[in-house]
Length: 405
Image: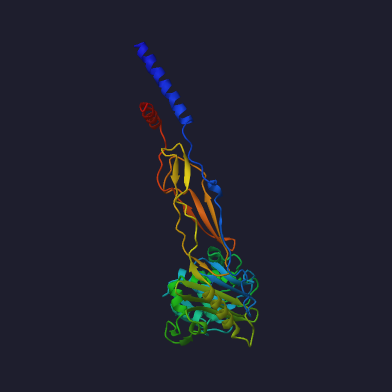
């Protein structure tokens, strides 16, 4: 009995020794021609590296793609400037998101005291919130903006806090709202790029689009004592192919301003011009907006970016039932590109993996940059699961190897 136990013990030790020898002498995976973490990056030069300088009257301007929020053209686009009644874009959005369209909005003395352009409703008069949004956006009434602000935010100051919170939420990092109507006030300002971010957010709201595209509307106070005829003052809406409209603005400090949006096929652009002339040059804002939009639609289209086929790469796997695993080539969507854009493609792929390997766990990324700015990172995945090599698998391999002698 004792002899049998000793025999089994030494047999077990021998198997462990054979396992160690087997693992020590396992053939390593075939080396790659280059380290996996150092795959050569891709680069595509701009066909025309000299982006044109557009002739613009505006002190600051920006053209942005709504899908990616990428600035396609800018002039002092990150410089804070007064933005006049384009402020009312935010006022309208907050009312749509936080108010009941059928709720009753009353004009306070403060609201009724606002200067022209105004609806002229006397203090104490009431309207449906939905009707006042047309007054706000079609005619740009300053008294209406204050009435809405007090209704939604409890006070102008409370509403300004809501405006700034929403601005931070959508990435308007260089904006500070003080008034709901855009009348000149200390510290009330934004940048062309931030206003384009606001416009990009706004065009995703169908109720907002319906309001700004309405040619005219008549509203009546709740008790029916007064009616008001409203007409859309956005000339861009009816003069530019694909125009979605948005909002005009003017104060003595800000000059003529306009935030616009236009859509053609699969491209939607927004633009902002601030300080685009002062009286009598009222038409400059339309000329500037057309110049920006023409630049976008004439030069930018969605194009595919060629990347390396990664399916032939084998990543070494440690402690796995297979020594290597293949990886997938990610599907890269088309990007909005122009002749003025350069493209860089960076491959960051794991040099090895440890079992178990799972198909749904990323083994690296392919990163696309346009003009040295990252615009997308796409995961690379193993093509199959690789289970961890266990002791019984090693013993089976040893037995199969030695039984072949």
